[in-house]
Length: 402
Image 1 (cartoon, helix red, strand yellow):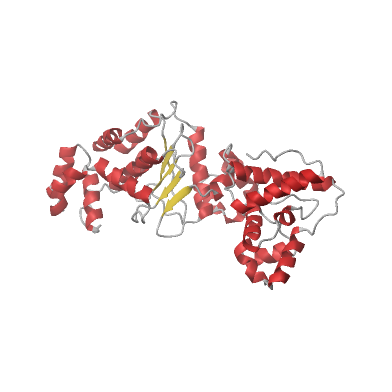
Image 2: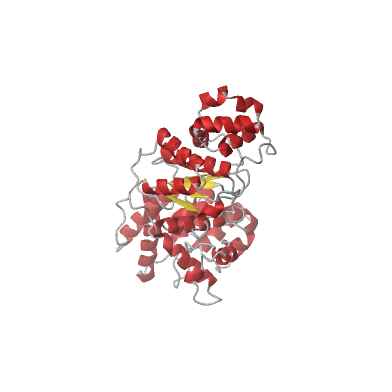
């Protein structure tokens, strides 16, 4: 973290801090990075100094924005890309809404407004607003699932209850989950980021409330280990056995239904090397989908733990969309479930018949649903082998645990 951070006592200190803020804004650091944390702290130190200083202040942020608009002949509509919406622009310019750190970054980088002008306090009774748009969370759905019940103190307390719900994320800040760019989302449709954040918070909180007794040792899970887990599929309660076994190895497996507009099958949350989390939604409640989803997220854990990507969100209805890590996870998951060299030689690949699928599954010591799922996927025909894929044979195993 920058060594510029210290209590500001003089104009020289202030100038140094403002210079450092300008440098940090120029590189646009991630909120949870060392540089991002330094930016927040410096902004607060500048603000604190100016509350008690008798310096002649430069124009406040709104005056600075209005001046740049006049210089460049900009309308309020021109500020939408930097502030977020026409209503927000209007509220900011009328001093009814505080500038957020993301707005400050955008205005500095996009319009060249000096950082020291934007960072100066806008109202002596308020600090810079790093606020979340709480109303955008799916509060009604979260409440209907009972997520907010422990935090409600009155019928009109939903936003405050929501904030208390997110307190369960500590020591992981909410903004780190909501705004971090170190994640990858695989989906053909745009996911609701606020719903995705709420779901992630629920998963992290559940995993933290009941952690595995043993810490995960990176490297413990390899291809042979994953294949051994797949062989549990032959048991009627195979999915539950697999989750229990992974927990013994230090991996939390959380079953949590997806929220509307998230289209999730599963997620690998790898923010902690000692406590990785795999979350599955069971949105199709089929054995073939369960086993591929589980192996796909395990593949992320094996291949990508410690990489710059530490959250993977997967809609497995779509292909890997050219993403190298998704391709790697798909290939490993498929090969663990049915080794590629076996699949290429198998009659099941060509015949697409129940007897052939059952025969291959028996030879491999796995559930026929896995073979049927592979056949259906490669044929792009989800009408065939419908009786083999294990409809309604997963979710009941986890009832009362979500």
